[in-house]
Length: 456
Figure 1 (spheres, rainbow, N blue to C red):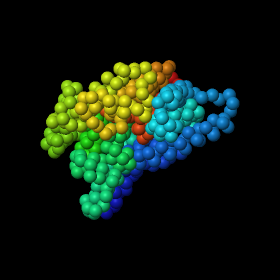
Figure 2 (spheres, helix red, strand yellow):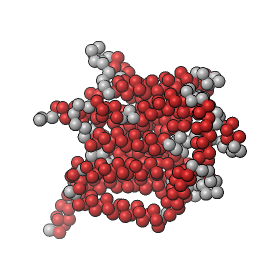
Figure 3 (tube, rainbow, N blue to C red):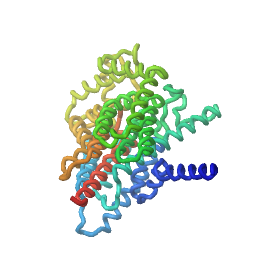
Figure 4 (tube, rainbow, N blue to C red):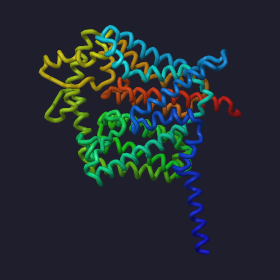
């Protein structure tokens, strides 16, 4: 009798795991059509695979172009995809046109424009996209983000274990000899700590999409991915820009969770959230106090806007560059100096003030655009950041809270990470946020369609 009960318990446990656990998320992911899977993988695996994920986007745009060619003649590009596509293409073409007046050679121009070329490719994809071929929902995007977090960090831990077991093993993906927390700054396929942190902090908050509609086990799994992703950025990746961007994103997440009535009624999740907050707070103040010190010191220097190299050399350098960049911008505020000259144009003022830096960009997407294309560049990046609002503005049916949450994740992450990051002028990050904006629009479109066809 005991053996039978034990066997029944194991059977029920296995059924529970398959029906509700991470296994179920993976099974549901692979049940989606191929286009949905490719679109999701192109951004959730971006921190792990880096620029390799751009191949997925090239495939999608090629498919869309051929598909559009053989579609019925009466079928036209759909709103909001057509408008998103136009915004992306105009952004690229405008900067490409201005670059012809600044780049010394055509080879240089092509090399510089390659950094923002993913925006053009995704714009073409959006313009010719047939929404009927994509069945993405907020839940499927959230589940894909959960899978991406666990897969990325599992591989990171495996590589870390290899580097510990075999000291001669060069763990390039763990940052090599670069200084940072936990013996190295996590970069994986991104190749650089700052882009990796930007991508991972954004995906971490996407894991909460439609969490209130999941069962308790899947809620715990999703919230676990959320906590693990944020912790990895703060304590393993160590990039202060993405870590600080997590503050407004965390406020957004609290707002989103408070709106979820189903979630508030679940005592297990409420207890889990409270426990997680206590654990992370304890980690901040006891396990790795250096992380908190670095964040607070860097933020103080940045807010004072006075370079203090004795206290913090990295942030001090950025303050010097920001001041020099703004002064340079005022000398030619309309059309700027070109992408190729965005940093070299600042060098005379830096040398005048006695500074010599070897950077190639200004560690701020807004200043990069201002020096590359003047006020026109600032306008273009601003329009790109608010693009997720376009579909929300034109909706005729009540907007679900997931629509606001997903859109605001993208906008907040782009804005706050863009303050200290190259953002769009980096092929991987440009591809990542371009795909996110399009995925967001597809989810909006499908939820709108489902609401309009549901019984009153």
